[in-house]
Image (cartoon, rainbow, N blue to C red):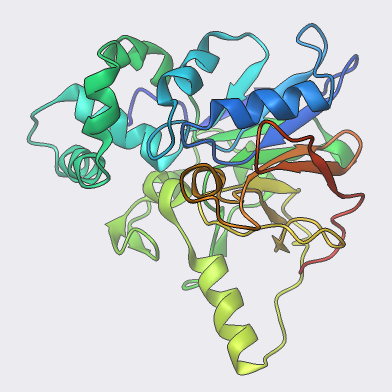
Length: 295
């Protein structure tokens, strides 16, 4: 079996009829921040669900604690590029170029430092192989998606839509193209883990004073992503571009460097509001009551 072929491309969850659905930004080993936020919102493990945009491991102090979330029935992650890098490193030597590249990236990011302390990381491989690349949750107006990086390629103008995601076995997954952020050729399996074309296009337009892309893309339901650090602004909430809501607010930067404005974002999709924490010893602050327009 070739690298990433075990992981499902899509997973579907029905709407939550009894509790709330939360989405958390990139954890990167910052379990204490997450636990603080879950306590702040009185998270109910019997009724509520927690979706994750991926990148459970690396950089922060407690990758082991974040991996342990994979055993919880209320936790629904998508695969992040750092999680995939860990998988490639666990698999070991191979002739598969993609796997070698991912494993080398794990080493360059010093993943070996925490795996030396946590020797049981390989035992999580079966759970990591079950994590999908994209989650589709609910139907109709309440439908939303969770992915790690992006579902749009501004270089080519290609984009996933609800209809394409609903088409089982879509051939678009195997389309090779250059991926901004991956800085190499790859397929959409790589793109949803690494792509940064939306952010690059947004920044280029802003610098040139050009018209910014709309926050909503009619054919694509709201899609929560991480991967690129974009701290929220209290009166506008997370950045939204073409239906992508960016939730990586730099948790590990806050923990390791105590940098102002960085922390972990937890978004309550059910109530359309979020919470942000930069210190697990301090109470969380309400981010925003709405994300109807882009920042």
